Amino acid sequence: MAIRDPFSTATVAVQNVHVRYRTPSADVNERRRGGHAAQAFRRALRRQPHVIVRALTGISLVARSGEQIGLIGQNGSGKSTLLRLIAGLERPARGQVLAESTPVLVGVNAALIPDLSGIENIHLGCLAMGMTPTQAQDAAPDVIDLARLGKSIYLPMRTYSSGMSARLRFAIATAARPRILLIDEALATGDAAFKERSEARMQSMRDQAGTVFLVSHATQTIEETCTRAIWLNYGRLVLDGPAPKVALRYRQWSQAVAKDRTEEAKRIIERSFSEREETRVYIQEWDARRHIRPRHAAR
Ligand SMILES: Nc1ncnc2c1ncn2[C@@H]1O[C@H](COP(=O)(O)OP(=O)(O)OP(=O)(O)O)[C@@H](O)[C@H]1O
Image 1 (cartoon, rainbow, N blue to C red):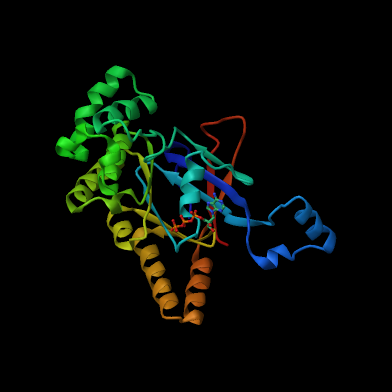
Image 2: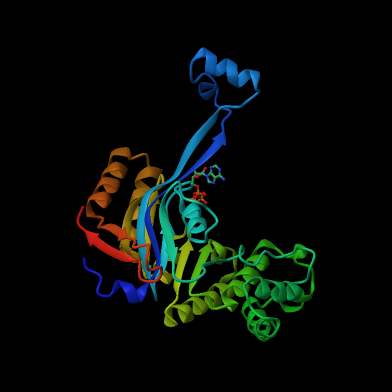
């Protein structure tokens, strides 16, 4: 598949990225790893053995304006790591991530303060996202309207339920009208009315040619709100394509896994891998904006 004009529409490029975490392990087998000398050395220094967790392995993708990309996959498959990587909060062990403007990860860019009221946090959050005090003041009514927290907007945020807090975070993050918005399950915690308003906000972002990445375990949400979906499994990209197709395949796989139909689950993964069109991203260092050169090639 050829991309007609990759330079004018690409907003995020992820080039063959690997993310690893080095983390202590209480596994007794890890304790026995290495020779006697290594074990004695660890014991002498009271060091716990460490393991390397490969959270993402060889991920490449190019996101374009107007796309809403759902990230799906089982627990621990690397969805949040990929969002954090795009947000610049994780450093890849290998590979590169490029973005045409600052991505906003809902709830992170504007770190909110629990002891301050909702309204104070709106002001603070807008300033944290780079608005001037006047812009922050102008944006507040829109944020209040989207979050619809009633009189609670005057109460300290620590008194909010998780859903109320998620609504305010989403409303603040979208107030800046970022061109690249990253959402980690934020919509799932809102009630039905908020879900509708937040979807309308995402639709308006899409109309303004922004790019949204959305992590959700609800394949229905991905199908309803996203144009494209990416399925991750153990840190690998299994399938990248139209949201209904990827969501359906993931559901079939999940059902097979849930019913212990291991062979069928394996076949679904293998079929998806074989159908996947590999994205290759070439980066030319000399031009930061026009470096994104995606090419899709058959595997
Ligand atoms: N800070 C960390 N230190 C060590 N390992 C981590 C860390 N963060 C994530 N991991 C590991 O990386 C892998 C991917 O985690 P990640 O949170 O990205 O998965 P996820 O798909 O978002 O999962 P979930 O659906 O459960 O939220 C997991 O094996 C996880 O244990």
